[in-house]
Structures are given as structure tokens and as C-alpha cells.
Image (cartoon, rainbow, N blue to C red; front, side, top):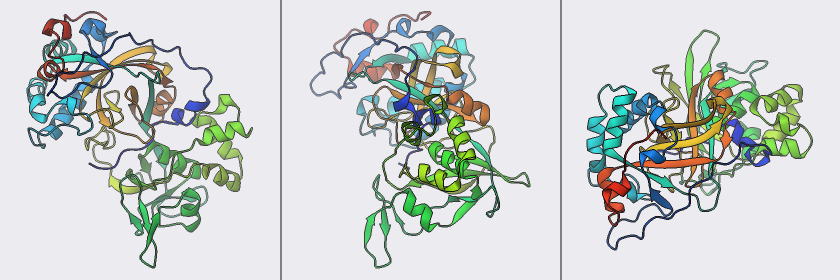
Amino acid sequence: MRLTRLIATASLLIAAACQSTPPPVAPPHGTAPPPVPGLIHPPPASTPATYHDLPGWHSARLAPALEAFRRTCDRFTRRAWDAPLSQSAPWAGTAEDWAPACASLSGPLDDASARRVIESLFVPVEIIDNEGRPRFTGYFEPTYQARRAPEPGFTEPVMALPPDFVANGNAPLQRLPNGTTRPYPPRAEITERGGSAIAWAHPSDVFFLQIQGSGRLIFPDGTTMRAGYAAHNGQPFRSVANWLIETGRITRGEGSMQGIRAWMDRSSLAEVRQAMNINPRFVFFQALPEGDPTLGPVGAHNVPLTALGSMAVDPAFHALGVPMFVETTAPGLGGRWSGLMIAQDTGGAIKGPVRGDIYFGTGDDAGNRAGTMNAPGRLWVLLPRAVANRLYRSRPVAAVTGPPGEG
């Protein structure tokens, strides 16, 4: 599996510092039925549901998620039929379990028809965070002006993967001239020594490009390049926004992407560098052709992301490619919102069973909407009926599926 897309949106930079967030959506009480010996166990904290339990299911827009799911099905066809979709979430079943759903949802369907097909094929199972930390954020693909070589205003390299980088899971190494290795150094050391670049841009743009993990670079001649995620240095992520607030450089109300950028624009290069170095995590990029401009960057599931159809999740709890229904709150989504998502990406800060990062699309508007999102919520996974019946064999089918409802 390729390395993850990185860390969520700028709103995530200030998540720990936020004082005013929308009221939490209270999850229902309940526990999963006891596992049957010899079967793959259900998710650790989960309860089967009916479509009547899904708030807004009847009116949710399904087209973006269906588009994303069809790309996921292409990935499923390349897997061994009997192999689990995920070693860490074997309860999600195998590629063979998902074949009927992929076949039934492969053609053009309007929302009403798709809803009926989904209701007949899938069983919703609510995932419950027993630690009480469910949260949903948003991210996007930014677009930035860039140059092929440094010039005034475009002084920060979009750095390529250096030759001394040794991949080692989430703990990459640096190969030293004498042949020995050490943990890859933090941001301050990397930026001080420099390195080869795929492009050059404004320092704050490169900083936020690293937060997003990928983006599109636009050059003066009109050509466009995708800066694709290559790897990170294995250092922990630390919030620059929190540090700026704690040290009095910005107010809590300025702790957004726009507020941080405004501070960077009015500060000296040395002050900006000091602030950026607070976060030792550093991201390297690869130059990629833009490809289809209507599609998003390639996520961890190795398919292009779909705006408001793809979501990043924690692979320690979930299998990529699985449909999920989300209820949460965000001004950029019009307030209280629910919708169908496909788990197609991961992120360094996306940790927990009820933790999602919704992909909003490309450009400033998508970024502004994604930046408003930072709220609790609820999460249901949609499992093929055969998978759900294996997991919850002690319950009758009607109690697992139930009739669809308005929500």
C-alpha cells in the first residue's frame, strides 16, 4: 500500500485550540452483540442499524459517492477474491463479498434508483467511539502560483524526495555519507540544508501545501503541474496555529488558514521560518501531470478523489473502499449535514474509529468550505448483506436491515 495522503485541512491545525465548535451529535447507546466463536468479529464498538436510523438518508445526494465507489470497485477487481480488504479491519469482508454491489452500481443511476439498490445490498452498521472523541474535518486540493526557479516572492522550494531518504514505514531514515543511517531529521534541518525542488512558491503557500499533502501549481505560461505527495520525514506533527496563539502572535479568532497566512505576510522571513519550524513534520513532493482537471489528487486507495464523495479515515480501524454514511455539522456544508462517503484516503492526523476528513475538491472555494469544518458527528459503515449477516449471525436479518426511512 502506498504511503498516506497527509494531514487534513487548515482547520485541523487549530482543532486543539478551538473554543467554539457546534454542539456534539449524541450517539445512541448500545453495544455490538457478542461475537460468535469461529467467526470474524464485528468492529469493536458497533451496532447494526436500519436505514430509518440514518438521519437524512432519504434526501442525501448520492451521485458523488457513487462515482467514487465505481473507482473503488476497479481496485477491488485487482485483489485476490478471498483476501480481506484490510488486515486491520477483516470484518469488512473480501473482494468477492463486494462483487455483487460493484456489479449492481456500475451503470448510470439517479439518486432514487441508487438508494433502492443500496438499501437492498447493504446493511448500515454504526461505529461508536467509546472514548467520546468523534470528529469530522475537511480538506481540499489547493492551487498555488509557482515558478520553475526562485525569484522574488517565490523563494521556497517545493522539495523533491532527496537521495539520502530511506523508506522505513512511518519511521524513514537518512543515509549518511559514511553509510550509516539515522532517523530522518526535522523540518529546521531540512530547510537549512536545502535540496532539489520540483518548483518554487511563496513560503506560506509551500507550508500549506505540505499541510494538505498535495496541490496544483500554476506557472506564468499557463501550464499546470500536480505536486503529488511523495513521503514525509517521520517527525510528529505539531500545530503552528496553537503556537502562534499561545505566544500572542495571533488571536484565537485568527487561527484559520487565512489568519495564519495574513500573519506570515506581515512578518519577517526569519519570524515565518521560526513559526514553520515549530512543526518538525516535513513533506516531500513529486511532479505529476495534471491529468483530468475535473478529478482530485490520487488518495491512499490509489484512485482520484471525488469532491464530497471521498473521505480520509484511520486505516487502523477501517478498510479503504468501504461506503460510509456521515452525520455532522459545518457552515461550509450548510449547517447540519449528512451524506454518503467512500473511504479512499488516510491522513497523519486522522486517528480514531469515528474520525473522518471529507474531501471538498480543488481551489479556493473548496478550501474556504473545508476550512469551516471541525465538528463531532456520527458514522455508519455500509456492509454487503452477506458480510453483515456473518458478523451478526445471532440477530435476525430484519433486525439488521429493517425498512428504509426518511431519516
